[in-house]
Image (cartoon, rainbow, N blue to C red; front, side, top):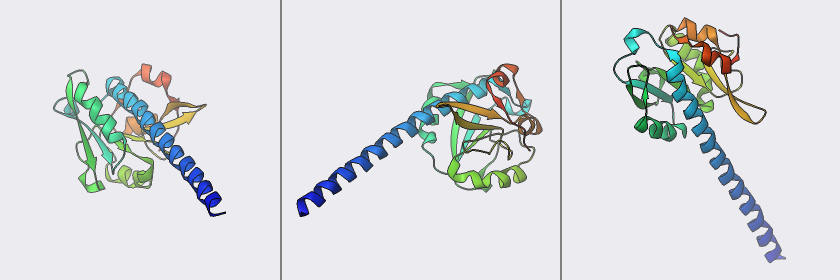
Length: 180
């Protein structure tokens, strides 16, 4: 009887660990897609002139697996027409955020979106989120999974209010969302 319980426990743990490994692998793959999208946003969104020179800063609020993928991309790519060097910064709290071109807010930090929008209302910063409903609440771009494929919602009001100009080509691929 004891060996049957141990065997059942072994099977259960094997399933849980393989499920975790699959989910972790899927999450890394998802963040690779997010990173490709984010890089392309640097090509199809125009920042104000004061943000078109110097380093191009992509910030991540908190700790997220996307940081590693963004760092790999930044080591090989440049941003914008003036080929700005891409720098990845992790912000542990809201007071650290400054002079950021893009701010990625992982789903675990989504509750900070409202505070970020209130604290930095006109900052030319593209706010990118990954949780359902965030574009309607004021993020510029929100990643969504539709029919098993990653897509992105675009809140034109949020990007325009921040002084960002989104190209028509990028708008064609976006899911338009009305929001703050």
